[in-house]
Length: 288
Image (cartoon, rainbow, N blue to C red; front, side, top):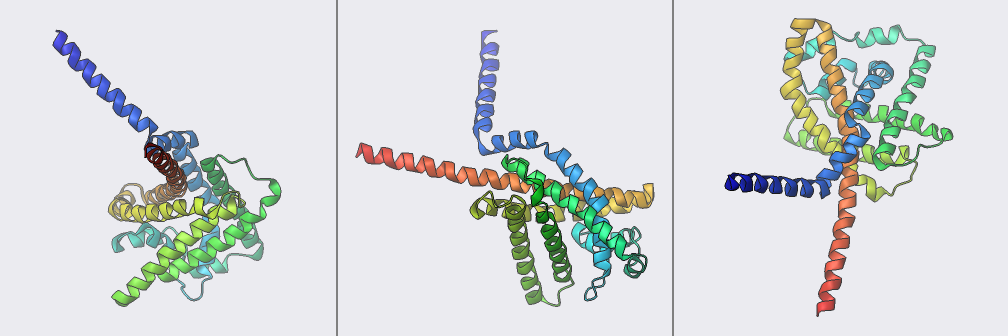
């Protein structure tokens, strides 16, 4: 009996030790901050508001793109990374590009732009929560307009880059431009929406982590969401495809805010390691 008791105590001791190591590590800090940030709930809000306010505006913008002319359905299909068999189901959700332009008035476009500004506020609030900054004042709302305009330009650029490459060299430069433009956009987005309250060096790791996360989400979408579109369409009809698109938007929100959180942890960990190295060097010199 004492042997069993000592074995249980030994396992408990190892569990407490492992938990303490995780709790004090960067991963443990990230887990706690993610819970405090309510990352999943914030991502669901990102997806819901993006569907209601940003997506109608992007449908009109994609239809008005004379050089590409693919329409918003092709934008979503490229973002999801779905297989060719599921692209038709995505196209059925949205009107043809020409019809979207014919039925939209100037007042409608202005209203869509105004509603789209609220989406920038959601992203700004998420970034402020990640860095534990106070909310910006009301007169900084002009930043949402600038961010929305650059976002539309970035999506147009991404749509042109995503066209089918002709050869390996064409694919290489398209991939390089896509990665660099994505890092620059998310790096600049944090700087703008946070009002310049953080240095550029603190925001770069978050931009890189966001781009890596979006690349991973694209691979996940091709493996999971693409088959789900086919099966959900049979089970639920067009609503099933919309559920998959909404789930993908939740994933995008999770990556956007989660990438910024990972970037903060990496930035803080770098300074923590720098302090440890300075202490080690000072102690080494004192012993000599």
